[in-house]
Amino acid sequence: MSTLLIFILAILLMIVAISRWKIHPFIAIIATALLLAMVLGVPLKSIPDVIGKGFSGIFTGIGLVIIFGTIIGTVLEKTGAALSMARGVERVVGRRFPRLAMMLIGWIVSIPVFCDSGFVLVSPIGKSLARRTAHPQASLMLALGAGLFASHVFIPPTPGPVAAAGMMGLDDDLLMVIAVGVVISLISLIPAYFFAGKVGKKITTVGVDFDEDTSIDDKNNPSAFLSFLPIIVPVLLMAMGSVASLVAMPEWLAAIFTFLGKPVIALMVAFLCCLPLLAKRHLFKQSYGIINDSLMTAGPIIFITAAGSVLGTVIIESGFVEILKQYTGTLSVLGVVFPFLIAAILKSAQGSSTVAITTTASLMGMFSDAGSMMHALGFTTPFAATLVVMAIGAGAMTVSHANDSYFWVVTGFGGIRTTDGYRSFTVMTLIMGITTIAAISLAALFLI
Image 1 (spheres, rainbow, N blue to C red):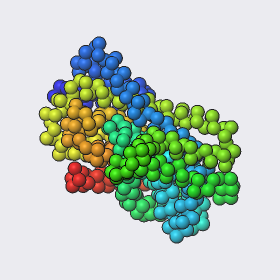
Image 2: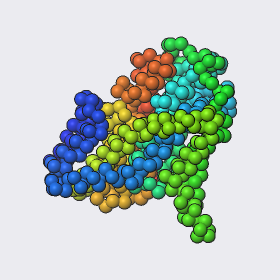
Image 3: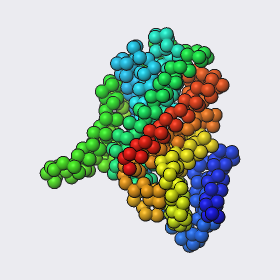
Image 4: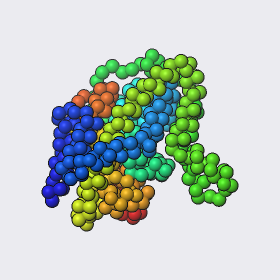
């Protein structure tokens, strides 16, 4: 019990350090890991090696995937491709079902582009659509916010879920994580769609609407086909890699499919698909700055993920999981709700979904490691680990409020007053999280 108390106090201290004392998550997580290592009896001479082992594991595993995913997202944003994708969905769905159009636009755009940037990019389309269809602007803004948020926490190559997948040993099963993430994210959007429609009618938006003709430049943006290519190609390549392991084919062909299906190679090819986008906008000369901006964005995420990996390694090396196994019966009753609750507490306390996802994933460990919390709770298969990634994502959207930068982006650029934001967007993220973890729990009950 004393060990459990020490662990709980350490996590609480980490949350307070990040949320109340405003210490950077990287420093807070590393300090917590170091403190736990010393208090839980890891030999002092072994601590540097434990830290190095946990830290370097991220760079040899999922680091490049995060980097290339971020570069692709930045290129899609800078070249106008994200707006072209949004316009493509609007043309197909927009006029008849504007709320559905904005939700789908957000859902698609946020797969490669961060939800904060995605909302700033796409919100003018939503305001223009509200004006042209006489649909309540708040409904469209809430629908857009929900669509962006769902992809952000569930679907790789968004950094949070892709980092969690890597930390849990799912590097080679990323296609499955994407597929399950698509399904789970769409489930989360069902209640959000109706909630946005009902509550949005009651909210009067403020601020000046963007004018469609002056705020959005479609003339020089790439085609929808070129814009979607960097998203579709890596998924197809990873699917080919999976086919190579399931279907009999010549050895040389299987080797090629397997090589191209590795997530890091698939995303490198996706980056090559971004080159026509740069050429279309004559941005090759600015490509150095675009990639540099991407690396500056990816860097903090990778380092926070690596710090989380250090914390996870300390937990394993300290023997904490062995102690936890004494309470497996109690914790197994919670099942996937256990990581959901941890992520939800972290999200609500410090605001960042990515920090909540990576920190919780580090606590759970790899499904293949007999000393991890995943193994102690019985999550020992790739599919079970995938459901845990989804449960963590559900927790990381529960809830968005004043300490979350995305809350202020949605309310500020959506023209929603702060008080209305609490009773609309905050409540909506709570509903989305609870609905999703209920669906994940049912899936876990029958499928693992």
